[in-house]
Image: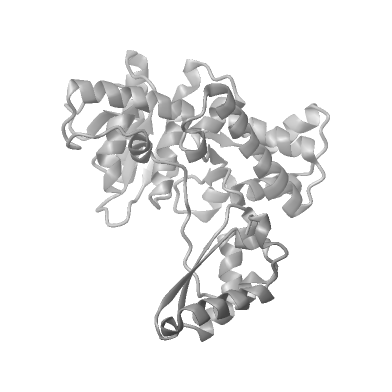
Length: 365
């Protein structure tokens, strides 16, 4: 329904489509048929037509749209329990390899040539990301398209939808999150930072902005892992971004920050597979990046993400954090995901490069 040749198209015209279809194929009136409506949010009253057809005809209907005007919560309300929602994410790493025609050996065995190729492609994946449209574009055009994605999210999906007038505060919030992914976000601190810069915005508006950006699938908010709902409410949430390429085009990111980009990518792998990680703070205040409970798993999993653990101090910090969390949560195993490091010789601890984890352990989710 973004095709201008269909205009003007109103809700009443949907019935004409059905009548024309049945007139052309009369026997199908007694069979299960499938109706696909893309960018249907552009047609006012589409939900009433869909609800009627579901009640009166033998149809399965697939509705797709790329706007926050087609939120799953609103579809559920409009269709009154007659819908199932599927989220479509940017390419996973395995899909990225498939798109670029990189064939994989047996998942459990990687030869030296295959390993080198996959490592190279993983570096590209961190930089290019998973949006299909930008995969074959040159570097500058790709960056322009990705910046345009952000503008579309801000201007169409958020500003127009919610009639936001305080654009400077909204842009400052997005810039802050893009510059600090995979970190705990304190809205109070950000509010005070805006005040010090002379930008007026209420805390309630900032809370609203966060929800709007989450609804538009730009960011994800992750709570602390705790039994107490009060503890979950008072502790800041960690923020992740839908695709690593958006981080790459929005900020100049030195190597020391690559660990946050890698953690963001690992989080999105969990989220893509329907798993909702939480972060954990030990009693000593040490953070473990992910506590996950995949469906069907016998116990929760602890995941720590670190770009490089060559330095003894770094390795000790990451290993000790996992060990402390395992004791407190009563778990036996923990995993450290890195850029290239690998070590599975320590009982109860696996250190794996991200590319290998994504193609082996990560596929079991």
